[in-house]
Length: 312
Image (cartoon, rainbow, N blue to C red; front, side, top):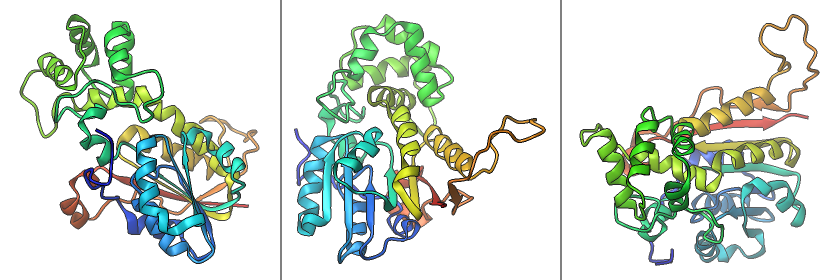
């Protein structure tokens, strides 16, 4: 089944806060690096008109098609690109859209992807182990689960989800091969950790870790963040919404580093790095959804937003 207009509705997170953080204004130029179903993009386009432009990127071609339908009324004001945001600078160069007034990242997996069983992102319903944002890429979750060595599998699960029992899970996975469906994998992880669990299913972290590995999410994020510096104009805003501690740590460390006048190693007596700050932190404390938003959209509960502004 494809993601179509009849697919589950995706509710964008922290929309008001994102628009305010970007300081969206009429006639400005903005980039939405993760357009999804177009919720944030629609809010930006409403504020940027007349005369503004929005470059919207997503690695998932089916998601791009949904966004095309939703944003069609804005015509040439919106540019939709099916690509990985790791290629951000090259995309901006191709469409001659830089410097820009703001860049938004809404990380993670969308409700549309989670709720489409055949994509294999969730264990709520049985489906092939896939988890690719871009179905044309080669590596799938099934490839990792069934062919990677036990030690490498344990490393992926630990590094991408901070799962304490990664070795035990990896051992059970290898012993249970082949594993081809989401429910089969969830059952193996549950057997490895025991059926008793708290608020989240014991397989949740393993599924997240595999999805991150399949799509190279953390590496792509690091690459994209580095490129934002040369794409933002003076006083342009960078807004990032993350959904787990690994993403948020990367964003926090990047922003703090770029806002620092010295990045010498701790304990250095005399600064020799010559680092010049490129960003100013707008949100020194992380911004979280309100209780009202969490109640109306439970998937927003883990969202964390950070904002920085480009210096000269």
